[in-house]
Image 1 (cartoon, one colour):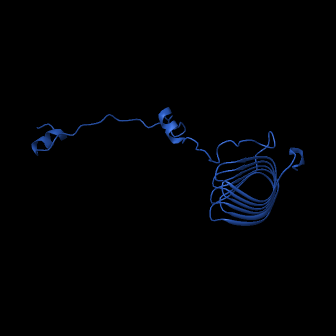
Image 2: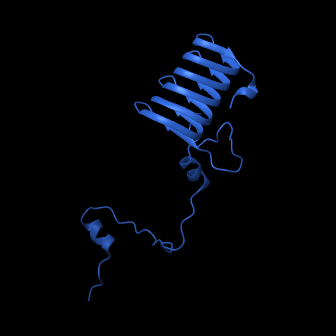
Image 3: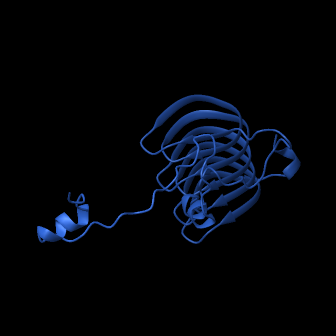
Length: 174
């Protein structure tokens, strides 16, 4: 009686390389997630970038409460009344009355037409209308036109401001 042939002996006889058996691997139970190495966790969490909405705001008006932030994206057009907004970022076009807002930011491609009574405005794009603001920053690419009342003003070289522009006492800004 002959002994049964080993699989590798048959493969050798046929001129094929022998099979290498790998040890059996036990799968972890489904209830226990496999821990990820720290390097994988770090790679999955991207670094925040400036302007990223996940970054903390420059300041909050309501301590201990959630920040009310509104973003009007590029190619978006919005009209109406905006109130109770802590931060407003304009990348598109807004025709509105803005009240009870702490911070207005107009991006280079952004346009705000209307009136705004706010704490701080950082303008890189265009503003047309009535602006009453405590701290106004006009960047090099900005064009501000209309009735402007400010307590503090900062203009970068190249920034433009036209119209009825008057400095006021900081306490006069509602």
